[in-house]
Image (tube, rainbow, N blue to C red):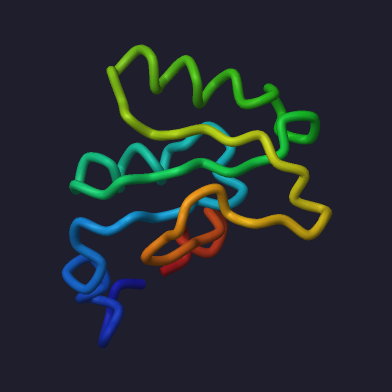
Length: 95
């Protein structure tokens, strides 16, 4: 829930870059992009239920600037770009 200090999370990160790790079809990523953030979706195509095709299709359809990265999340990996913050989609959904 967006209560207490979490109510200002969007002000704190305004205009920053967010890595949406495990972003699936990108619902959170595209929401954050609409708020003015630069967003990367980082997910594992082979284990994503549609191989990241949903996120790519949505990004192309709305003319989004979200960057998509196919990364094996079960191994040690580095985020492709330096982020202001990172969020796992499941965690973001519960804020």
